[in-house]
Structures are given as C-alpha cells and as structure tokens.
Length: 212
Image (cartoon, rainbow, N blue to C red; front, top):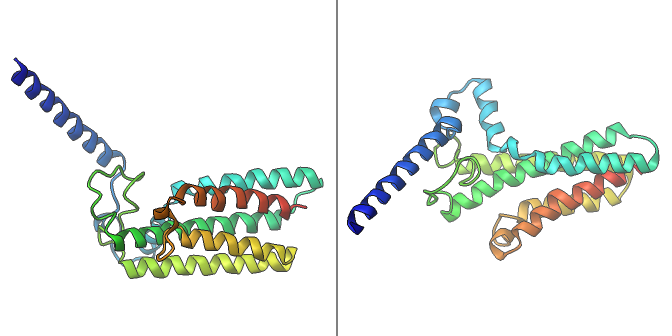
C-alpha cells in the first residue's frame, strides 16, 4: 500500500512539473535565435531591448514619478524637462544594471546552472545562454547604457547644478557594482539594500529635488 501511494504521488508530481513547464513555455518562451535572430534592424533592436528586461523597469520608474509629483506639489510648478531627464537617466541606469548582471552571472556560471528557473522572473534574460547575444556584446551594451545615463546626468547637471552630479555618480556606481566583480554587492548580502537605494530612494529623492 505504501509503495503504491508513493508511486501515485510521484506520478502526480511529475505530471504537475510537466504541466507547469509546458504552461511557462507557452506563456513566456525564452528568447532564442528563432525569435530574435537575423540581421534586420527590427530584430537587432528587439534583441537589445529584450536584454534590458523592460518589463521590470517600472520598478525604478515609479519612484521617479512619485518623487516628481511630490516635488512639483511642493514647489507649485512642474519642470517637465527635468522630470523627463530624471526618468530617462533612471531607466538607463536600471537597464545597464540588468544587462551587466546577466554578464556577471553568466561568467560565474550561476545562470548556466539554473535548471529550475522560472522565466522571466529567474535565470536572467537567457540571451547569452541561448546564444542570441554573446557575453562581450552584452558587456558592451551595458557600458553604452551607462555612458548614455552619464550623458543625461551631465545635462541635468547643467540644468540644475552640481548636486545632481553627486546623485548621478551614486546611482551609476550602485547600478554597476551591484553585480560586477570584484565588488559584486549582490553576493555580499547587500543585493536587496543596493536595489532599494539605487532604484527606490535615490530616484525618488532626486526627482523630488529637481522640481525644487
């Protein structure tokens, strides 16, 4: 009886895992060459957009919007240019952090060995592992995103003053050091705190101050 019960339980678990995996693949197929390969401009742009994991960028955009609203309410007027630049800078830093984390996790073997992943929530973007983009291409893309964020920061510096530069350097540094060696804050127990500070506290406070 016990043997039959264990066998039945094992069959039910195997069937549940098979159904779950099937549902995940149907709802959220991993990026692959069939979906994103080719040299057309459309496919090229889509590959690099997917690398930033755009669905998760709202997590850093929301504090900017709330901070901007709070700052504008306090000052009595809205500086739309500053608000737009703040949102763009935050999105660029967050995108760069996502891309560079994929590179660091691939180099450490973390993502390649993650066989129990639930895409797109765990296991990275899978672009490197599925050979859609190379690690070197992703690293260059992350660097370009950081440079673009720095450019937006310089524009804000010219618009609002030197204090913007300090916040910008802090945001870019935290976004990069979150996953890049040798610091790699995420592996030192500072991952959640870094994310909260870089993509929560700093965007909110910076966006609010820009409206002052």
